[in-house]
Amino acid sequence: MIENNMRFLADNNIQLNVCPSSNVILGFAKDYEQHPIKMLVENGVEVTLNTDDLLIFNSSIENEYLLLYKAGTLSVDQLEEIRLRGLSGRR
Image (cartoon, rainbow, N blue to C red; front, top):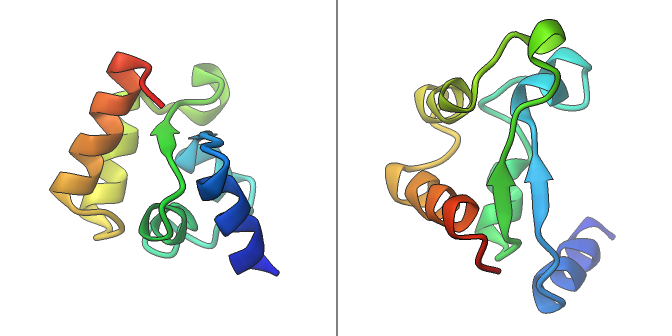
């Protein structure tokens, strides 16, 4: 089922805007290392990294990238691709 959903997203160029810190803090992801963004990226789903409410989650966009990098979730190349997609607005 999950694979079918990811294939649908990838095949239809549906981009997801992901907020890792809020996902972890709210319990939708166990931790940064096991965050589902890795599975999404590896299955061709286009994502961007975003922040949630700064006052509640206390994380900047730079911190979101750093947390995923330090946890080994995504490579530098994967994070750079996500960064460029977010800056350019390309889909």
